[in-house]
Image (cartoon, rainbow, N blue to C red):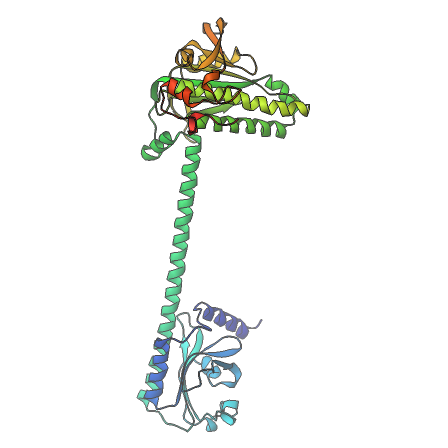
Length: 432
């Protein structure tokens, strides 16, 4: 591509920035052409913009309404476009550069022309403002200067249009950036609230840190799978992770439905706590209901696995009530965790549990004995702690449940518990 054609490509690209081609007539441009015609005493005045093939009329005075463009090569303005200044021809028939143009030799038999290029701030000529007559005409210097000034005004209107477009684009970019930042903030907040209790996440966002807290009354649920190592040897890694994720996702739903906080998963272990970070009186009952429903979910899953001759998942759950300290650990990856003897006892209860059952401590039994069928196990010696009185939690009492499995509490259950909650509420039990 030679230098001239390269300049023309750049000029057409510059014109495109104004997004003006094929737009509707506008008063600000029409006023300029009308004024140009009146000042010069000419029947026709035009503001034309030129792309690679045509002269398109943004404004016209003295021409039919349906005339909106013509080929560039037949116009006087095509020559004016390549000029840096005003072109003035009192008699076109006497002009060597214009006398052979079709507009002069034929319809509309133009005889007079005065035009000024519209030059933008980068130096590209986008079009022209011109006046045309059908008789030879002499213009005074002041009239020619008026054409020059009006062309500058037309260019100023185009520049204003471009500035408004650039402003709108900038506003759009700012709005998009703001929306993207807001979406990122919402995703961050959602993620934070997914990994931390809501009140803890809000405290962390507000103050940048979370003070450790001692909770005198909580219940810890500790669950894991017996012989998990054997399962890892019989399942492919992807299948093992999928099944473990399915189990833990369901446990998380069950815990949440009973107002418990999922604390963490460690390998095949799942830990949840009730009564924190917001204190409540129902945490021992909540943990027992959640434990029974987790066992029912695994039992139902195992029935299907048996039919397919797949290895079974044998879940053990320990539940213990007592004081803990809870807080945030980590700087780059926040973790809400709990510490204390109550957590250690819950883990030992799980280790001493039989697969498919729920093992609770005497401290939990004290709060739930009227509501559930309990099987005493006596005192069981556990490592590093000593003898612990243990009890198997079998089910909700038959007169206090709505199902044969004894995992869904009735209204009577909640009335006896002294907690204001109905069988239809979110925490009244869910189907496993």
